[in-house]
Length: 204
Image (cartoon, rainbow, N blue to C red; front, side):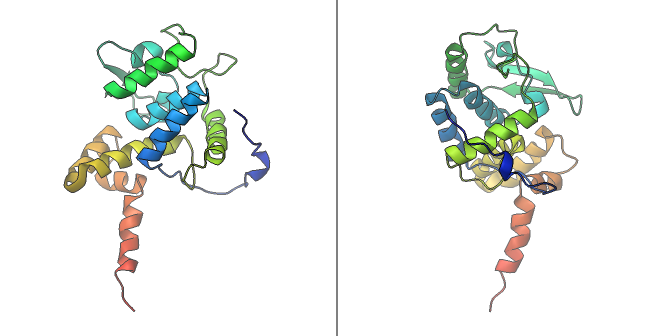
């Protein structure tokens, strides 16, 4: 797959906040990347959306964890040191297996996300790749980065909760290890949307 050179497009000292990807579009992207032979990024984006992990934890996942017969695995979060158990969606685990086979059945003890030089992918490397993917696949997201994957997971959980959205946010606050549900709302962009509604409520 050819990706354009984006070096000239980066703006220095520009502050941007990562945005989430609409769930259906994210899943479509995972499938298209797989069909186009970009198995590693297909898997990484899928794992980011389904597991909701920080990239520092996502990047060092091993095949034996994500392909566990138990359908779940535990990690100690790098940032917090807290233990967290992840349950692997059965449908998505089939995709993980497909990626493992397409990548030549790597040693199960190896990290899933290795570069061609057999080093674990860095956030800088992945962010560059994501920006190129956004253009090539015309992904409808304003600012994309590794944070987008975790936010996509969070927004999907809230959207699926419907009338129980408040409870979902409380659960996400615990999963994300945020200090409060308000922090979670801000992280997912919900708080800004709520504040924007204040202006929309005015009439002329």
